[in-house]
Image (cartoon, rainbow, N blue to C red; front, side, top):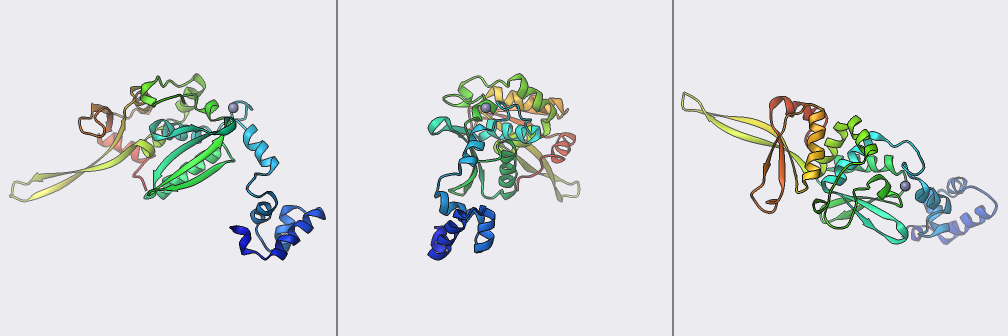
Amino acid sequence: MLHAMYAREIVDETFRLKALGLTDKAIATQCGVSIQAVRHWRYGNRRSPEKEAARTRYCPRCSGASINGEAYSYLLGAYLGDGHITEGRRGVHALWIFYDNRYPQLIAYCRAAMEAVFPLGVFMVKRNGCTAIKAVSKHWLCVFPQHGPGKKHDRTIALEPWQQAIVDKHSEALIRGFIHSDGCRVTNRIRKRLPDGGEKWYEYPRYHFTNVSTDIIGIFTAALDRLGIAWTIHANRRPPHQDALTVSISTKAAVARMDSFVGPKY
Ligand SMILES: [Zn+2]
């Protein structure tokens, strides 16, 4: 679509300048078009060989590069809460995390976290009022070995020691990821009668996290315990979550602590 906006002469000029040995950046400047446009004309929809190599080779596990602990903990929480991994061609996997379009800040946050873990190959896909933040890599199973066939709640979900070491250091980011993907902050309003016959409303904010996997619930509550945040748990009775467990964080001190690093979704 992009190239249709430009005259054939400009496109030809970019190829001529490339033949003269100019860089993509210099060509873009000289022709007054974006560097992306220059690359699009040259490579079509293919990626540049350098970019492709960087994308498929880079892995914070295999290459021994240091992983961004905070971004990783957040993504792990979001993935375990409500994300999934699909297998594409030639060993490439895609991590998908969907957020409602009502939460642009969450979408931006999640995208930044994905780019911090895998700098290349992050896309935004819009679908039915939601945005998927999707990142492709040959190494998702290195960083999320919890992936497997079937539903997460039908298999054991246990963190490997290196993952545990990261989330121990970044419990807040992990909890934030869990709440953003599969939790919420709700406000209960309670009406109290006053002695003079009037009434007064009190508001009690609380956090909920609901999941069917007892292993995932365990990872979430262990993080709360590390931070000394009080929680309670109960089984759901109502569809569509009748098989799920809900963790509630409702004491005043615990909610205040959660507000300091999670807060409402927006
Ligand atoms: Zn790897």
